[in-house]
Each structure stands twice: as C-alpha cells, then as structure tokens.
Length: 160
Image (tube, rainbow, N blue to C red; front, side, top):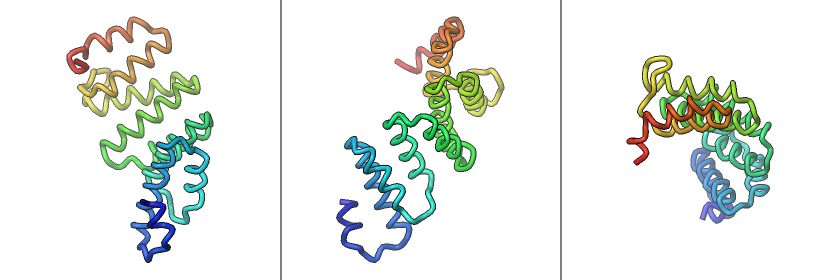
C-alpha cells in the first residue's frame, strides 16, 4: 500500500511522505528484502527520524554489517532518546549490538544504566523483564554464571 501511495506521486506533505516510506522500508525488511530496504532508506530526502534509524539498524544487522549497525544504534541511543521508553528500546538495541560484536563491557554499561534508570538506584534490580533478561543473557555470554543465575532467579515470577 505504501508503495502505491508513493508511486502515484500524491501530493503528500513531508510527514505523510515520511510515514509512507517508513511503512515501505519496514515491509521490505519483514519480507527479507534487506537490500531494497536499505536502498529505499538511502533514497529518502528527509532527515531520518528514530523509526527510520531503527529500521536501518535492523536491516544492517540482517546483512551482518554489525559495525555499521552499532553506529546507527549508538546514534539512536545518544541522540534520539528523549522519552523514557525510547531510551529503553534504543538502549536494548545498542546493548545487544555491543554484545554481538563482542564489546561486553560496553554492553554491560548500557544494561546497568537501563536497570538503574528503571529502578531508581544503581545496582538495584528493576521490574522490567526485558532489561533484566538482557542483563542476565549478557552475564551468561560473559561466562559470569553466578551473576546470570542471580539475575534470572530474582525475576522468575515476571517471566511466568
């Protein structure tokens, strides 16, 4: 549908044009047409908002362009996370990307910061299962099995 709207060269205002292009890029990514997705993103003549950047990062991950994806997620987290939920979503993406490229200490810093933001106190577990799961899986990946086990056990009720 987005492609049809864009193909008709409708008189779209910039916001609608951006929304139609975002819909198209997300659909292309979902269909596994990663190169088409990235090409469409590069053809858009508007400043990228956080939705485009997240789609671009996910497409770069799908192409195994992990360093480029890291750069995109870094930009999202530090420059486009004005709302609390944005900071969480972008932080999880950045932390996982650091983990994928083997930068575990950077990932740990991000996950601990997310946990602190959610709990209000440094080192205190939060009641956000995505943040705690990310932290626990990172500890497991770092072979810190006791820390992973502690993290998972504290929040078993959240995952049920």
